[in-house]
Image 1 (cartoon, rainbow, N blue to C red):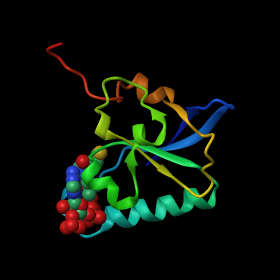
Image 2 (tube, rainbow, N blue to C red):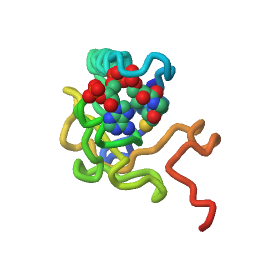
Image 3 (cartoon, rainbow, N blue to C red):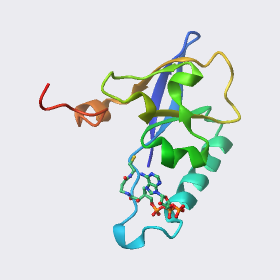
Image 4 (cartoon, protein in one colour):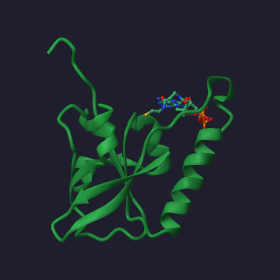
Length: 122
Ligand SMILES: CC(C)(COP(=O)(O)OP(=O)(O)OC[C@H]1O[C@@H](n2cnc3c(N)ncnc32)[C@H](O)[C@@H]1OP(=O)(O)O)[C@@H](O)C(=O)NCCC(=O)NCCS
């Protein structure tokens, strides 16, 4: 699923997208379903002039789609509870260099406490 988010950029609040959640039913794993869905989804977002896509996930997996650590691309994560390597971003063709800043999740992510990792022992 792609979900709306915001980038708190110097020039203005910018509409971006989040790739989350993402899952394929276990009995259908490893047939390329996820890769096909993600690549097709990113193509549609590029056609709709979306400049940036963010996600939280395993860099070993998402790098195959071009995602790279957000902090290396002048983006700040929205919670200290997101591991640095997990906070990733992909620049699409409409991206411009002024588009930097803090990524902000839409309200449902906060309401469902679906941001970052909790530490029950903290
Ligand atoms: C991740 C997931 C969506 C992949 O779906 P899929 O349809 O099996 O994916 P594909 O068939 O397109 O690709 C499978 C490839 O991804 C690899 N892969 C899956 N999870 C991985 C991970 N966490 N890290 C690195 N590689 C991973 C597989 O080893 C496989 O590699 P290969 O193509 O070299 O054999 C699926 O495993 C899933 O639903 N997992 C549970 C939910 C989840 O973890 N979602 C991601 C949340 S961040």
